[in-house]
Image 1: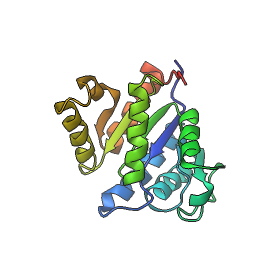
Image 2: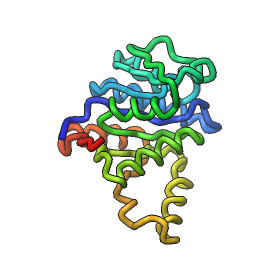
Image 3: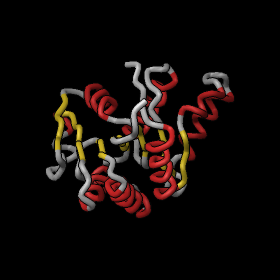
Image 4: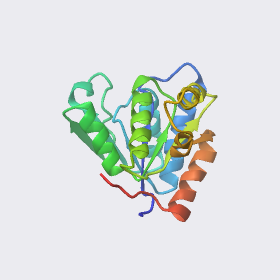
Length: 193
């Protein structure tokens, strides 16, 4: 087990309709930097991704962006991060994010965020890793995703143990406090990949 030094944040390249989402992304980036943890994220400078990176940078944090070449223009790669890793595919991007992270936090987002979140939960279910996964629930954004997982359990497509693969934490303050606790008490990641 290693300590949590790097946190991968999955979040939207759009701002969403509720101003609380962008405020939460900025606040989480700032809090992560103040906690002395490195931000690993999707590399964009727009939407939630841009806000989380800008927040961390504003507090002097270290930020590593990872973006596929074909998305570099669509998501407008952030030019202020410490390191920008350009990958050849989405699969390579997700693998690189996984390799660099000790823990994962999902903030609100769209289909890409759902994809990344579900995949990292699935990898944990398959015992490919034991890195912490937190869903930072802002204004009920993760209710539908959790309901989908609950439906899969109810319909016999997932075991009830699936609930223990991730934690839903309410708001930025509680999520950053949980990450800090993981860094000092539990330790972070052991990778089987």
